[in-house]
Image (cartoon, rainbow, N blue to C red; front, top):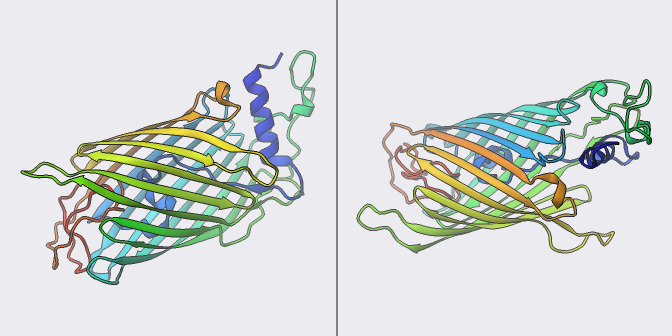
Length: 357
């Protein structure tokens, strides 16, 4: 008979691809939001002194065969003479070991607006080319499986009309930040596209993300000792009828960073169903200009005994600018993990030193 975990996998993919005329796609989410800043918001593009490389990999629900593996690679740079950040990002999400693949590559831009000595505003844009692929030979619908022995029926496969879609997409964002707080909004999928593989229209709906946080330095560093701080943060996402929030905090004492987050929606949805997804533990280590991160999602839903949780690995490396600053400002709290000072920017609006958040 079919293994219990395989049944879950068939159900998940069937819902994700073929249910109803109102089917709507949803994007993957990273648990280490600020280790993949360009995926969170174009406004983070170039929010570092110099250049930055970021690599992110997520293995979701490894206990269920062939579920979701997501990766992101990004490079961004701050152009101090124009107060602008530019970047490029590649994203790929694989469901079912090649059964369903969504990927895109995009160009990003952010402009830094000086409001006061302590407040900055950053609007951002992203333009991307996206593709979706399906391999019908790697999947079988539950209705096409022999109930007696669990084997696929003769000639069983997904009924598709095409195996690839190409499209253009865009995102826009704005963020405000100071030395101790930040907040912003990102609107993704501004271009409506049909990503279906059958005659049933399948849209990736507009996604709205609101994010922000506050950094509390409870013990200032002395005699070359780093500050000790706790950062409280949130990340809310809404896409069609789906909405979810991440709530958490980081304790930072360089070179160690420890985070604890909750993902879900405390209140029930319109159908009275809860959305208790996971508790997330994050460990980060700063090694000079490099940050290494690992996180584990402990599943809270009814799938808890079958998923095996979720694992994420992240690597971020920064290349500081060698230019001397015109004005020396304090650290900016919403700067992404992995940069603990060093390089400096020539822009009069830039901070000399960048630290976690």
